[in-house]
Amino acid sequence: MMRGMIRRLAAALALIAAPAAAEVASPPPATVVVAFDRETIRPLIVEGLADKATGRAVEANDPVRIASISKLIMALTALRLVDEGKVDLDRDVSEYLGWKLRSPNFPDVPVTLAQLMSHRAGLSGSADYIIPLGESLEAKFADPASWREAVRPGGSDAHAFLYSNLGAPLVATVLEAASGERFDRLAERLVFAPLGVKACFNWVGCEPDMAERAVTLYRHTGEVAKDGAGEMPPFCTIPVAEGQACDLESYVPGTNASIFSPQGGVRIGMVDLAKIGQAFDARRGFFSDRARQGFERGWDTSFHPEQEFFCIYGLHLQIIDPPQALWDIAGQTRPATCKDELFADGVARVGQSGEAYGLQSGLWFDLGTGRGFVYFTTQVSPPEGGEDTDGFTAREKALMARALELAGK
Image (tube, rainbow, N blue to C red; front, side, top):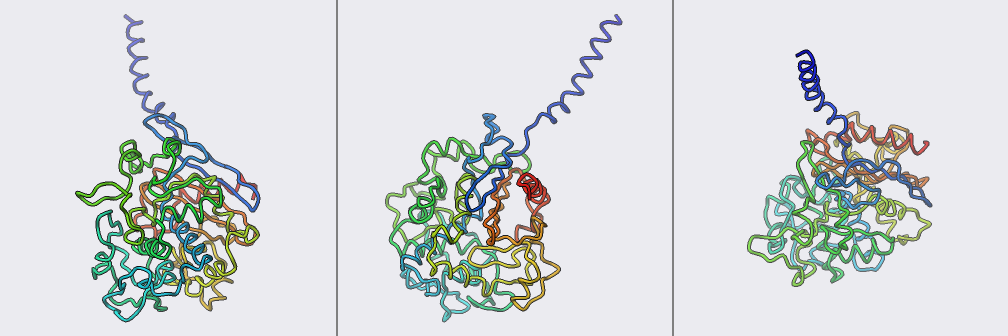
């Protein structure tokens, strides 16, 4: 009898202990951090599962949806078209689109690429920015709900800046109209191929082996948020209006590039994303002086003392951890409300952040030395006030602290 009681007690204790053991054994969220400088690329952190359903571990260059870093790639595409003489950042985009784009509140004020890429075009920050295949981009921007009532496009007052995903479909469509090429193919020709990068928008044009290595995005609660098995090729991977066939063969460039999700739809691995960071090194010759001046001009009205996160932002490039000296150049005082500290090592870095579908990502580098980091981490709780108000999360800060230590800096 005593032996039976002992066996039953041992079994009960095993059952009680089992959940704790399983919790300890649970893999961390998929996370990759890659360091780069002007000459080298080095993975620092590679951990977690790319796909929980199959148990596949993430690898350093597995493609992932990088969210708003996609806008930086769109900006690079635009500046390469500036190099080709096909677009002018200060020209009225209506001249490219073939229809008149105006804020209904300022019908005589033209809208330019520079304004759109600096989030100073007066666009709404809350309007839906996904225009499916088969719907009209022109109709979308004829709707007063797409615009802010009292904000003049290109204005220089404190409230002219508002981060808006709605500008990206316009920029991408203008680039198509100016070049006659589909936006995804433009990015491939002007950015990805020259840099030896394997990447795509919304899986369009990506080879099957990339889709097989995709990182599934999970929400903090554990359910699939993006790029699960039912969302990958051969299933339709672009937004399509009801009753519209998922067919790009008849798509006319310059009509609605929103279907490629230029605001956040790039799929790319972190090793390849590091190559894009390296492209900013002037010695690589990726940009002409003319195009580089376009980026530099983007800083003219990029200091936003009223913002909590996008305190210095222009042409889809942000400066984080800036010293007071940078604010002094602009004749302003760094606001106490600004929450753009990520590395806290005294080095100002340039780049772009991303946050969507439980993922947070970043591409940040020091323009002076060329040293930088790219990263993503998944299953992150959404910021309570949105990406533009709460700054970087504790998860990101801890991740970059690890990266700095591993990089020996």
